[in-house]
Length: 418
Image 1: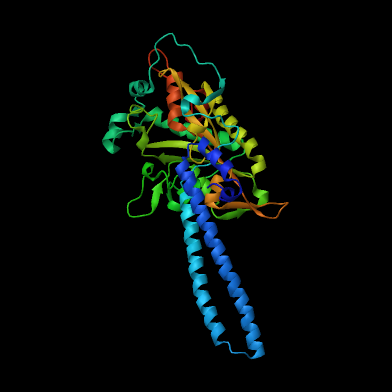
Image 2: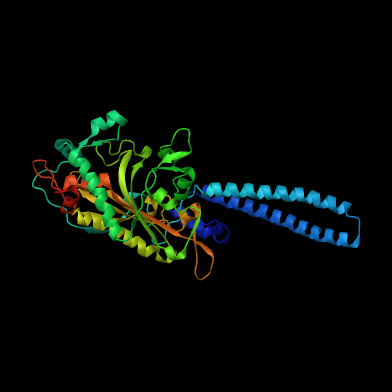
C-alpha cells in the first residue's frame, strides 16, 4: 500500500508518480477527499478528547472542594457520547481511506522509463547468440506431440483448455528442471522453503493480488481461501504482521509450487501449447530486506535467474519494463525473455520485481532499525527462477534436430541419471 502520510506531506508529488502508472485524476481526487475527511474527523475527536480531559480535571477539583458535581457530571456524560461518536466516525473514515488505497498501485521508481505498454519497454542486453538452424524450426507443441512428451488433448479432456499432461521424458525433464533450479538457487544463498498451495484472503491482500484481481484467482467454494497464483504470495506472507529481527535480514528464499491462474485477460492469446496455462510449475525467488540493500539484491536476483538460462545454454535478453507495463505492486521490474526459434521471437520466462515497502505496508512486515530504534517497513522483492513449463518449451525449441529429436542440456543429465 502507498504511504498514506504522503497524501498530507506531498499530494502533488504523489499524484505525479501515480499518474505515471496510469492512476486516473478521479481516483487521486477521491484519495485526497477521503484523506481530508479523515483529518476532519481526527480533529473533531481530538477536540472532544481535550474537552473531556479538561472536564475530568475540573471534576477532581469539584470533589476536593466539596462542590455540587451533578451538573458537571451530566456534561461529562454527554461529552463522552460525543467522543464515542467522533471516534467511530474517525474509524469509519480510516477504513474508507485504506480500502480505497488498497486498490491503488505502487509508485514507480523515478528511474523507470515512461511508456504506455510493452512496446515502450527497453532492451538492456542479450545473453548468448541464438543458434541458426539449417531447417525450419518447429514449435514446441509439434515437438512435444512427436516425442510423446506432452498430451494437450487428454489435458483438455480432464480439465478443459489450457491444461496438459506430461509423459516419460517430458515429465522427467520438468522434475529435473525443478530440482536443478532449486539447487542452483540454494548455491546462491537462497533457503529452500515448501509452502501451501492454498492461502487466505489476508495473504493475497498483503502481496497485492486482492482486492483488485480477484477475478483472476481460483477461489475455494465455501471458504475464504484461494489457490496461489505464484509462490510469491505464501513466501512473502510467512512474515505477515511480524517484526523481523534485524540480524536475520536479508531473508533470501526459493520455493517450488504449482501456480493457478484463470488467465481471464488472455482470451485468444497463446491458446496452443504450454506458454499460458491455468496450472503450471514455477520456482520462485523472494527476498525480504532493508531499503538500503534492496537494489543490490534486485540485481543479484536478475543475475541468478539469467545464469540458470545460461547454464541451460538458452539465449535470452533482459528487458526494463516501462511505467505502463509495470505490475500492480512493482516499483521496478526487469523481465527475462528467452529465445524461441519455433516462434522466431523472445518470450517472457521470468519477471524480477522490487516492490520497495509497498507489500510490507499491506502485510505489516517490519524490522527494528538499529540506529533509530523505530519499527521500519522492510522491502520485498520477488522473481521467477524460472517458469518450468516455459523453460521446457525453450529447451525443446532450441535443442531440436531436423528429425524432431531433442538434445538434453548437459547440466540436466545428472538429474536424469543419464
